[in-house]
Image (tube, rainbow, N blue to C red; front, top):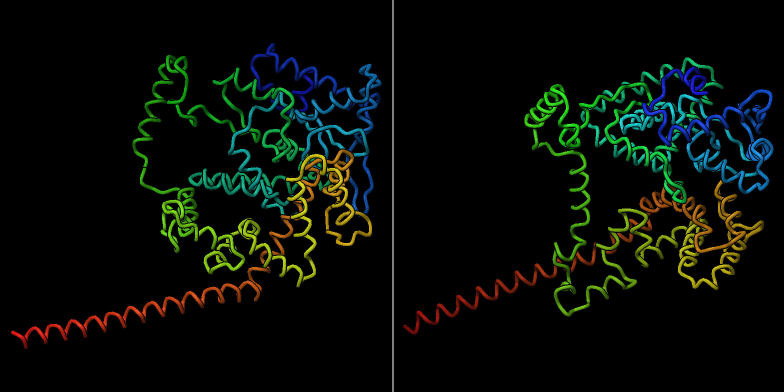
Length: 489
């Protein structure tokens, strides 16, 4: 079996210790996966016709569960689903519709992972590999390959971290894109999904990490801390890319070459220009400058600082429904700042009502209130929210994608405070990318910003004129006193 997987993947086994618990487990899993993919006795892999396209090389979750019950002598379907989910968590097969690596006993389509990406053949990938993958995704102009929000954030973070060698990463991504474009369209589609599933294992989407089982890859890293790493794209990561300063004492007692590499590394560190400011520091400074005037410890507020005095007028002013220009300007920072402020939330709701899309914000607020309700009221309130916003013929129907709708309807079989988490997240992103940007450009927000700015400007002008008047009176009184003194003398 080990020889077969090596022939298929084109690379050797990554772990040098074939008798380690991890490799023994991987081999057992791969024996099962190989039997599942057998052309005669395995699960039939077929191409399914969709509405406008064809979905190649897929199997259903029901087929996998039934095959396991039949060929592995399992009587309970739940046990078969549990074993299948553990195998899917390691990336041996994966759903093509979402990032949740688990097995479902339904018509969900799954696809088998290429042996090249099996854990026994691939070592722990580096962040440079992940940066190449994300950069490559941005070059492939296809809707199904667009980056998710968390992937876009990771790409920006990696670009700041690898600013010095980003050109090399970009060149690697370009070269791989050119190679991929020469492949058949169906083959390219399958390979894209397999590569995405590999990163779902090693860089999972938020909320998709399985914390109920022992992470085999984490145990593997703990027991092989000094093992050299192999890139998933075939680029060998040499040991000199890691700091010798952080190696163990056993590694420092090594050969002459290791000591020479450490000396070279330390000399390189001495020659570095340490005064250069990174992009991370620049973004942190811009964030600090943006929120500086809202920090009462840094800038003295008007009225006085309630943290250092007994005057609570500042807090009362912040909680009032008549916001000042400073509060209104803060709504333009982000949608989160707008929704945190009760006055900003009310103004945003009025704007949505003018666009006949207020049901999105009403649904979001209803789900927020659901999370704070006592447990005995949660089930009834969850059903009320469904009837108001998601049921067929609902009075305030919202626009929800099929995936979030299915997840929400499944969660309502056992309703809880977080049954609408997926739907709420989808509606929030919809408001953030669409309604919120229009709100900032709208006359409603701009007029409110100017209206709050004008009284403060007038008040400042009055204060300036009063100061001028006081100075002029003071000068005239001082002149009269000096004249009187001179006459008396």
